[in-house]
Amino acid sequence: MSAAAAVPAHVRPFAFSKGEKWLGLVLLIIFAWGLSRVDITWARFLLGTENAAKFVHRMFPPIFTPRAELIKGMWETVQIAILASAAGLILSLPIGLLAARNLMPAAVTWPARFVITLCRTFHPVIVAIVFVKAVGFGALAGVLALTVASVGFLGKLFAEAIEEISMKQIEAVRATGASFANVLTFAVVPQVMYRFIGFIAYEVDSNLRNSTMVGIVGAGGIGGTLFAAFQRFDYDFVLGIVLCIIALIMIGEVLQIAVKKVFKQ
Image 1 (cartoon, rainbow, N blue to C red):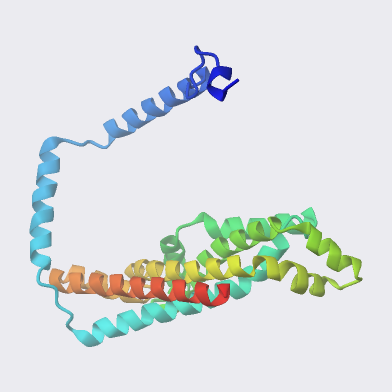
Image 2: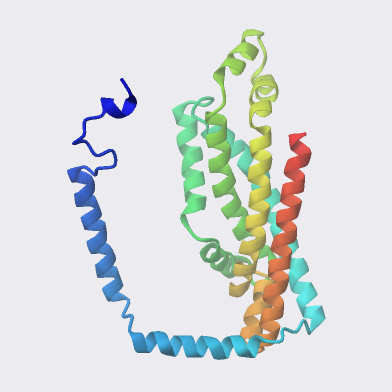
């Protein structure tokens, strides 16, 4: 008997259950209610389109001067991203290990997961505002803010990656009488190393993007230069800064791919 003949003719393979239909209806109502609260009108849309066209027209052709201000902001952005990623990595490794439920007891994993959740609760810009108030304007506030964000991101991914490893290798190494450090070195690290490299590379790339945002609130980097250019209505310089940021992110993406290839070999 074929598979098609085994299915009754009246059964639809992609039919929704009654509960799924009610859920879809509720989501549709919420969407319609939210759309009605946005106050979208055709006149407002046309006005926004006209203003956007004027704004874009004033951005061309892009300029890259004052060059010293642009280079300083870009270099500071790179420094913030690298320092924050390094600090976040150093803190995330032990926190992620402590949060792994297959290696640690619940009394240890719950506090570690609370720290990770706390670091992931707020957007980096909000955290940057707090650190700007605490340590003042400058790159230090940006480094601290992105370090907190890195701990929340890397700590969670590290813990989940460790929890997904095969326990057979761990049990085999433990059977030899190895210490906990040797179990980590010979049973845990080989299984998660490549994934960790991917996580770290992605976080560096993410911090490059986020460092442009935290600069808007005074936490250093090219974001401060971008915000100052907006305030001066130097929209052609704004476009120049945006193009430099795009180039920086593309370079980071190329380096990320190269690093992953090296460690995969």
